[in-house]
Each structure stands twice: as structure tokens, then as C-alpha cells.
Amino acid sequence: MSAAFAAPALASGFAVQDQSAASLGLGHVGVALADDASTALNNLAATTELRGAHYALNVGGIRLGARFSNQGSLSPAGTSANGAAQASADGAAPLVSFFYARPLAKDLSLGFALFTPFGLSTTYENSWVGRYQVQKAELKSLSLMPSVAWRVSDQLSLGAGLNVMRAQATLRSAVDFGTLCFVAVSPAACGSAGIAPQSADGVATIKGNSWDVGYQLAAHLRPVEGTRIGLQYKSRMTQDISGDARFANPALPGPFAALTQTPATTNGGIRSALNLPESLTLGVAQALSKDTELVAEYAWTRWSRVQDLRIRFANGAADSVTRFGWKDTSKFGLGVKHRLNAEWLLRAGLETESSAVTDANRNAVVPDSRRSFVGLGARYQSSATTSWDVGYGHIRFARASINNAVPGQGTVTGRYALDSDHIGVQFNRQFK
Image (cartoon, rainbow, N blue to C red; front, side, top):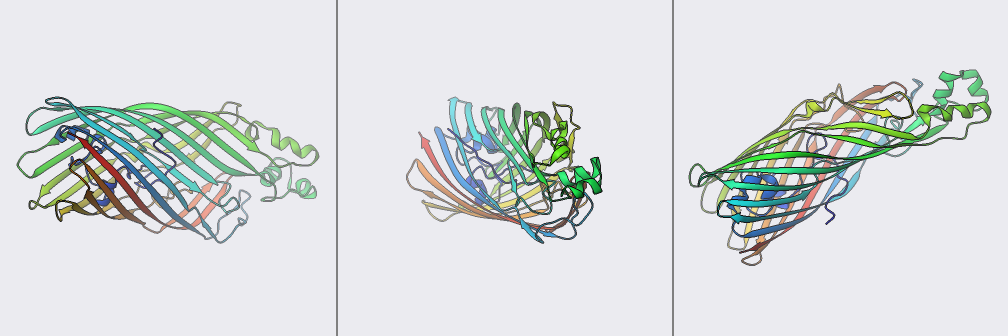
């Protein structure tokens, strides 16, 4: 089954949280819960709590709104960058995930998850003021994770899973051959041939893919009646991406055409390493009554693994380096579940998360900032063995500034305003 498509980065960095409509409606909390087959991802140790075989199919969508206001951006030549005063990097992406869990023996269970762990889709107008830094940045990923869980005692279960991940990345930007000509030849000679900065753009597109394998470890505790505690660790991974760089160069007159035939402007192979962070999540679910449960969660992610993205070219061109300089993040979530009757369960949740990015190191590839999330959802029990979850959430990002200078690619200066909407529908089935 094909499970994942491009997704905007909607947890801090470029992590994707919208794997389950049930979790979405609770504010992305769920490591302490064991309500359906998505437990095979949210806390794989808790699959021992499920009775019989379960599967869940989640279909969702994300809309990202990103608006940039230019405040003096510069071209690679140091002159005022051509382009509109306002630019957008809006996008939308579907998400599909699948989960399965079943008992293997009295105290042993099997889990299976197919999901999108990381994603990014940032696409600007081709002529925006920051086009020499980025026009499009895209990361697609798909993970397949089998897992096993063992009930050690009535109070404790442990679990382990193997995360097999496929990643595909695309990075596209404009190349200012006018500035290249001024630097490599002379302003007078290039100007007389009608070649000027920002007037002779080419396009460089880099694409690559890779596989890597990581792991998850989890624990689920039931210390007293009505209290559940979940703990889950996700390992770091490194995607060693290989692919190609392709150039669409302008037709320059006479001897100036040689500028389009250098190692830095001709097609060739590339390699790069993308570091993906480890994370640790702790959650508590506490029954307040027979119909109401409060859920709280804290998550730490080691985004400081991501310091830069270095692309190495097989044809001998100098490395391309995009600076990130990210820091670790913390996330706090609080959700509540309330059962109205035998058919309906309502959910609501809040989440706040710090950003891996600061104003000093923000770039146009991932213009991330601190965010707050509000989620609402419900479950309808359509029969004794089937149910439907729906969830909606909205993220509001803190308004953020950028002043990112890259040699040969100009300076992007301005402010970002971002927000996103999330929706999910999940079908759950149990086989007793």
C-alpha cells in the first residue's frame, strides 16, 4: 500500500505528527494510550493492552500558509533584489497511514505501522526575491515499522520496533549568471553583451534518495487503576542521499557561453547526509471519572543534530552548504477525552512547542518558528467492532524575522507569517 506523500513540516523542524486522527483531536498526545491500532506507532509497548486483532487506516490532509514580506533583500551582486514585496510559499499535502496489531501469545503482541515520519514542502514563486537561495525544497519519507511487545507483568509492558525508512529530497534554486559574469569576466564586458545581474537566470535542481534503518523502544506502565504512563524513544537516523544535479542554463552569447560549462554549472552526481534526530516522549493518562480521562505529554527532540546540509558534487564543483544551526526542542501537550454515550467519544487538546530555529539562523528552506496547536475530535462507535475517528487542528506560528546572507546567493531579509490547518479521518476495525 502506498502510504505517504510530501508533507509540510508541522512539528518542529520537519517532523510530521499527523499520523492518527485520534491523536490529532487530542493535541498530538497519545504515548500513554492504547485505544486502537495506531498504538503500534504512538507507543508500541501498549499493543499488549489491545484485545484481538486491530487495524486502522488514517487519511488526512494538511494546508500550510506561508507569507513572506520583503524588507530589503539583496541579490548575489549586493543590489536590491528584484521581486514582489510579498511572496507566499503556500502548500497542501495528503497523508495516509496504516496500523495493525494483534496478539501472538498470552503476553506477546505484534505491531505494524506504515507512516510518514518527516516531510517538507516549501515552494515559492520562481521570481521571488529569495530565488537564488531556494525556489523549492521538498522532503518525502515513508517508514515501515514492525514491532513486538511483551507484557512483563500486570503493571508493565515493553516494546521494540525496527524503523525502515525511505527518503526522497528535492532542492531547486535560481542561478544568477549575470552576477557570475560580472565576477568572472568584468561588468563592462558583460554589460556590453546585455548580461547583467538578475537578467540571465538559470535553474539548478538537485534530487536524491536513500534508505536507512533505525529503531524505537517503548514502555507502558499501569501503576494503579485509572493511571497509565507511556515512555517512548526514537533513535537518530542518517539518510546518506545520492542523486543528481541538473542545470537549466540560459543561452549566453559568444565566449560568455563558457560560464554555463563549468563544474559548478553542469550536470553531475551528488551526495549528501541528512541527519534525523532522536526523540524521547513521556506521557500520563489519568481517569477523572468513568467517562473522562486527562492526558498530558512531554517530548524532547534532538534537533541540534541538524547543523548544516552539505551537498558534495561528483564533478569537482565546490560543496554547497546550507547553514541550519538548529537547537533541541521541547513540546508540551494536554488533552481530554469524554464519553457522551455508548456511541460517541469527544476529544480536545492543546500543544505548545519550541522551535529548532532562532532569528539568527532562520533560512528560507525551513522558516520555522515557535508554535501553538489546538485540536478537536470525536469517535463514533458504529458497531461492536468498528469505529470512526475524525480530528481537526490548527497551528499558529509565532511571527518571525529572517536576515540570511549566503555568498553567491544573496541575502533574504524580511518577516514570515505562517499557519496551518490539519484534518484526519480514521477507520478502526477489531477482530475478536
